[in-house]
Image 1: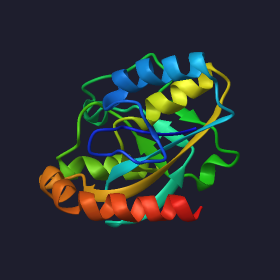
Image 2: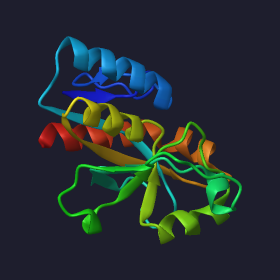
Image 3: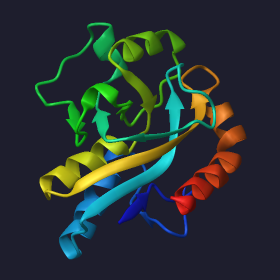
Length: 173
Protein backbone atom coordinates (compact mmCIF):
# COMPACT_ATOMS: atom_id res chain seq x y z
CA UNK A 1 0.00 0.00 0.00
CA UNK A 2 1.37 3.40 -0.97
CA UNK A 3 0.23 6.30 1.21
CA UNK A 4 0.80 10.06 1.24
CA UNK A 5 -0.26 13.04 3.32
CA UNK A 6 -2.84 14.28 0.83
CA UNK A 7 -4.00 17.78 -0.06
CA UNK A 8 -1.03 19.39 -1.85
CA UNK A 9 0.87 16.09 -1.62
CA UNK A 10 -1.51 13.77 -3.40
CA UNK A 11 -0.54 11.18 -5.97
CA UNK A 12 -2.75 9.05 -8.25
CA UNK A 13 -1.00 5.93 -6.95
CA UNK A 14 -1.27 6.71 -3.20
CA UNK A 15 -3.96 6.79 -0.51
CA UNK A 16 -4.07 10.15 1.32
CA UNK A 17 -3.90 9.64 5.10
CA UNK A 18 -3.69 13.19 6.46
CA UNK A 19 -1.24 15.86 7.47
CA UNK A 20 0.60 15.63 10.78
CA UNK A 21 1.04 12.80 13.21
CA UNK A 22 -2.49 12.68 14.66
CA UNK A 23 -4.45 12.49 11.39
CA UNK A 24 -2.01 9.90 10.05
CA UNK A 25 -2.35 7.74 13.16
CA UNK A 26 -6.14 7.77 12.98
CA UNK A 27 -6.55 7.35 9.22
CA UNK A 28 -3.81 4.77 8.70
CA UNK A 29 -5.12 2.72 11.63
CA UNK A 30 -8.54 2.68 9.99
CA UNK A 31 -7.05 1.55 6.65
CA UNK A 32 -5.02 -1.20 8.34
CA UNK A 33 -8.05 -2.47 10.24
CA UNK A 34 -10.17 -2.61 7.07
CA UNK A 35 -7.58 -4.30 4.87
CA UNK A 36 -4.09 -4.88 6.33
CA UNK A 37 -1.43 -4.58 3.61
CA UNK A 38 1.82 -6.56 3.49
CA UNK A 39 3.87 -3.36 3.24
CA UNK A 40 3.22 0.37 3.67
CA UNK A 41 5.23 2.86 1.63
CA UNK A 42 4.88 6.50 2.61
CA UNK A 43 5.83 9.08 -0.04
CA UNK A 44 6.19 12.81 0.49
CA UNK A 45 8.30 15.89 0.94
CA UNK A 46 10.88 16.62 3.61
CA UNK A 47 12.96 19.46 4.93
CA UNK A 48 16.71 19.01 5.20
CA UNK A 49 18.69 19.84 8.32
CA UNK A 50 21.53 20.81 5.97
CA UNK A 51 23.41 17.89 4.46
CA UNK A 52 20.73 16.66 2.04
CA UNK A 53 20.20 18.96 -0.94
CA UNK A 54 17.04 20.34 -2.54
CA UNK A 55 15.42 17.68 -4.79
CA UNK A 56 17.50 14.83 -3.29
CA UNK A 57 15.37 11.70 -3.07
CA UNK A 58 15.99 9.62 0.03
CA UNK A 59 14.60 6.26 1.10
CA UNK A 60 14.35 5.54 4.81
CA UNK A 61 13.02 2.98 7.26
CA UNK A 62 13.81 4.95 10.42
CA UNK A 63 11.92 7.77 12.08
CA UNK A 64 12.30 9.79 15.24
CA UNK A 65 9.95 12.03 17.18
CA UNK A 66 12.16 14.67 18.77
CA UNK A 67 11.01 18.20 19.53
CA UNK A 68 13.38 21.16 19.15
CA UNK A 69 13.14 21.91 22.87
CA UNK A 70 14.84 18.58 23.65
CA UNK A 71 18.20 19.82 22.38
CA UNK A 72 18.13 22.85 24.64
CA UNK A 73 17.29 20.82 27.72
CA UNK A 74 13.75 22.17 27.73
CA UNK A 75 11.98 18.82 27.54
CA UNK A 76 12.26 15.06 27.93
CA UNK A 77 10.13 12.06 27.09
CA UNK A 78 9.43 8.68 28.62
CA UNK A 79 8.31 7.35 25.22
CA UNK A 80 10.46 5.44 22.76
CA UNK A 81 11.13 8.15 20.20
CA UNK A 82 13.00 6.12 17.55
CA UNK A 83 11.35 3.53 15.29
CA UNK A 84 13.16 1.52 12.64
CA UNK A 85 12.36 -1.33 10.32
CA UNK A 86 15.87 -1.21 8.84
CA UNK A 87 18.15 -4.22 8.90
CA UNK A 88 21.24 -2.00 9.20
CA UNK A 89 20.38 1.19 11.09
CA UNK A 90 23.94 2.52 10.73
CA UNK A 91 23.29 3.10 7.01
CA UNK A 92 19.93 4.76 7.51
CA UNK A 93 18.90 8.36 7.02
CA UNK A 94 16.75 9.14 10.05
CA UNK A 95 13.62 11.22 9.44
CA UNK A 96 12.32 13.33 12.32
CA UNK A 97 8.61 13.96 12.73
CA UNK A 98 6.89 16.69 14.66
CA UNK A 99 3.71 18.65 14.13
CA UNK A 100 5.94 21.73 13.89
CA UNK A 101 8.34 22.77 11.11
CA UNK A 102 11.84 23.75 12.22
CA UNK A 103 12.76 27.30 11.19
CA UNK A 104 15.83 27.73 13.43
CA UNK A 105 18.86 26.67 11.37
CA UNK A 106 20.99 26.54 14.54
CA UNK A 107 19.00 23.48 15.69
CA UNK A 108 20.05 21.53 12.59
CA UNK A 109 23.50 20.68 13.92
CA UNK A 110 21.89 18.89 16.88
CA UNK A 111 19.78 16.72 14.59
CA UNK A 112 22.68 15.94 12.26
CA UNK A 113 24.84 14.93 15.25
CA UNK A 114 22.20 12.25 15.96
CA UNK A 115 22.19 11.06 12.29
CA UNK A 116 18.82 12.75 11.74
CA UNK A 117 18.91 14.48 8.36
CA UNK A 118 15.30 15.03 7.30
CA UNK A 119 12.10 16.42 8.74
CA UNK A 120 8.67 15.15 7.68
CA UNK A 121 5.51 15.62 9.74
CA UNK A 122 3.97 12.20 9.11
CA UNK A 123 6.61 9.45 8.91
CA UNK A 124 6.96 8.62 12.62
CA UNK A 125 3.22 7.94 12.82
CA UNK A 126 3.34 5.77 9.71
CA UNK A 127 6.04 3.56 11.22
CA UNK A 128 4.34 3.52 14.64
CA UNK A 129 0.99 2.37 13.22
CA UNK A 130 2.64 -0.14 10.90
CA UNK A 131 4.57 -1.58 13.84
CA UNK A 132 1.40 -2.01 15.92
CA UNK A 133 -0.10 -4.08 13.10
CA UNK A 134 3.10 -6.02 12.40
CA UNK A 135 3.35 -4.52 8.92
CA UNK A 136 6.67 -3.70 7.29
CA UNK A 137 6.96 -0.05 6.23
CA UNK A 138 9.28 2.52 4.73
CA UNK A 139 9.33 5.93 3.14
CA UNK A 140 10.57 7.78 0.09
CA UNK A 141 11.12 11.51 0.47
CA UNK A 142 12.13 14.42 -1.71
CA UNK A 143 13.79 17.45 -0.17
CA UNK A 144 11.85 20.66 -0.81
CA UNK A 145 13.53 23.02 1.64
CA UNK A 146 16.11 23.49 4.36
CA UNK A 147 15.01 23.78 7.99
CA UNK A 148 15.66 27.48 8.38
CA UNK A 149 13.85 30.81 8.43
CA UNK A 150 13.02 30.44 4.70
CA UNK A 151 11.55 26.93 5.09
CA UNK A 152 7.97 27.75 4.11
CA UNK A 153 8.90 30.07 1.25
CA UNK A 154 11.33 27.49 -0.21
CA UNK A 155 8.83 24.67 0.29
CA UNK A 156 6.22 26.63 -1.66
CA UNK A 157 8.69 27.57 -4.40
CA UNK A 158 10.03 24.02 -4.88
CA UNK A 159 6.93 21.96 -4.15
CA UNK A 160 5.43 21.52 -7.63
CA UNK A 161 8.73 20.47 -9.22
CA UNK A 162 9.51 18.20 -6.26
CA UNK A 163 6.18 16.36 -6.53
CA UNK A 164 6.77 15.78 -10.26
CA UNK A 165 10.28 14.42 -9.61
CA UNK A 166 9.07 12.20 -6.77
CA UNK A 167 6.22 10.81 -8.90
CA UNK A 168 8.62 10.03 -11.72
CA UNK A 169 11.02 8.30 -9.32
CA UNK A 170 8.32 6.13 -7.76
CA UNK A 171 6.68 5.18 -11.04
CA UNK A 172 10.07 4.03 -12.39
CA UNK A 173 10.60 1.90 -9.27
